[in-house]
Image (cartoon, rainbow, N blue to C red; front, side, top):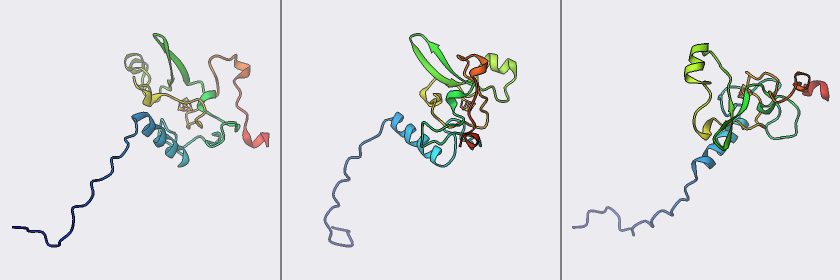
Length: 140
Ligand code: SF4
């Protein structure tokens, strides 16, 4: 006995969706956060002097000119991470490591990202006199 209310053909099977890799999904999520004025790592509002996210040549504060962004070496590879201590005590920092660092790509910090509010000028590879961030308002 057929219990269908209407005489319809079976719907076509759904087209197979192409599944994006975790890296592609993360990159899209980060781009979305930047477009909403949020920092991709911290999720918080950007620094008031942050460089524009859609112009990689724009002046201003970026993770790349922040003293907390460091390229950590492990075996033969390099990992750009934010070692900002936040509210960690010295003992917590020593034991657990920087709170924004994980062992995955999700905590990698792109140098071109506009700065978060914890930005402090300085590239540890540069001498002190070169750790200067041009203020876009003054440069115009
Ligand atoms: S701006 Fe500095 S403190 Fe903020 S996420 Fe980037 S590297 Fe970390």
